[in-house]
Image (cartoon, rainbow, N blue to C red; front, side, top):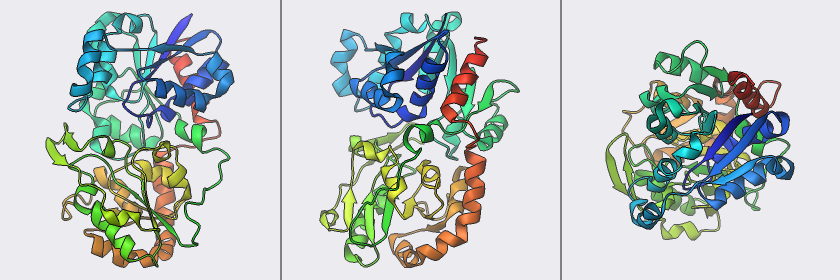
Length: 385
């Protein structure tokens, strides 16, 4: 019997929904394949079980992968500086990984398994955790993956240009997270005052995020202009996990600015760590999106609506494939410039709807079959099961 492991190995649960549904589909549709969920933290198991449901969970073998005793002692200090627990959970469970035929993951840290095991390594299957445009999505290390299960044609074209894809190591499956959290779900009401809700969704990266330069001032602006609407500050879940952020890719170190006192205004909601940051509660409920480089903009555009982007790089970042999503709305170089734009959000929603639908379709292939089923079938087919 083939054995397929799904790796849930992060500090937060924000990536789980990108592969949990595939695990559930494989467990329930292919009894000839043993499906394992490999989780490094109990809250990750809780999240995955909630996504797949009780029936599928009962058919999955659950394995808690833990670092060894020495690594667990060092983790509280070293996790502040690097993904120490994530890496040692892989390093200290290599014998388990060697029993698998395939390992499915949302990030490239799992390639450590392939480097350490060499010929004993399972096939490593990559499911990107988002549908964004930044070049980190096409990092050269990702050439180490054996199979890519991607959301749409955009990734295929860009990854092919980057030399990551060959003729037969990829499949377009759609966006499994939509199966997990979107289907049949009504739009939640975020405020009860009848005013529009503006979602501010900054990334955590100290080089790319708008929070460091603009975030606190944006909160102050909305506190001073309650007639414009409500503000939900829902950053990438990792932004408030640390006070000091370092970008390994871009070699930038910055201290995260604190939330200002004006955040207590009745028209402002700041969420620094709840599951609503990644379960589409805010992206579904908001009327308008304000962001920088987060691929959550494509989740927001499951329903086309007005988008605005904060450029904290004095225009240097505009244009090019890394910022393709900035064509989906207007771009502002300051909080004051953004504030002057927001009164026209309804007109901007109409103005950009066409390009939003076009880019969404290029990025995410919804298809007729659920993405989770497509992913499960692709894995089984790849393994010859």
